[in-house]
Length: 294
Ligand code: NAP
Image (cartoon, rainbow, N blue to C red; front, side):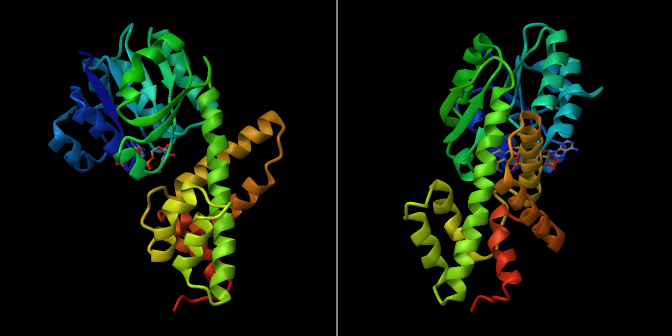
């Protein structure tokens, strides 16, 4: 049985790796902040002291970290996974990073005889916990097929998009829609609230309408609750929209709604909400509209 390595135990990486442990795999984990590993260690994973040790001990290494610079560090650093990996091993990155950062890692991996499967995910922490993520993959097809059984333990829908960086771009396409949907929801909800309609009722009507989506459904409680505990932070969504806008520039596609939503997220971050869930856009617009919930 292949030994599995897992680097990055944040809101997503922790439940995803736990699902691999629960499926009976031998999993070795590393995270910058060791305390966050406790739940997956309790589930049966083992601890490694560095990404390099993970690379040495494991056949397939998964990374799920915040952003591109972090991926470059945990994959390519002196103590990074590739420093410990050898010919025939597989690296699978499930973070949301740019196509350029991804290509840099793929090239360095190839030089060591290691294939990189690009596998960003779509879905919330709740979907990560119940193994219902969507997994967008690209890279060498035969290598993808080797890791597919592991994807099936973490996700409900797997998509193979091609041999290069296609998965990275498709992930950004989804997130620009997700972010803009929350901007539109904020506008609709605050208008409804100021006209005397109760917040939860407005959210539920939106979720059940033609304009509704799975996203508006599972954000309804968060928006109505008003606490905005992070499932996906403002900070990470700003990172994704920056990547989407850069891709738009590269391919010559204007993305006006994305640019506008990026500005709204900036104002959320500037008012102390960078670590809140990105659905906090509703709270920002309430503030800008002089509206206080009863
Ligand atoms: P998160 O909770 O913020 O976790 C980020 C992870 O990256 C943690 O393991 C963190 O380590 C690590 N990290 C950050 N900076 C680091 C550094 N300088 N060196 C080493 N490790 C570092 O993020 P998340 O929500 O799990 O998201 C992970 C990835 O999935 C992101 O690329 C995100 O865009 C993407 N994604 C998220 C969601 C979602 O709903 N949350 C959905 C789809 C995709 P520490 O624990 O030590 O901080």
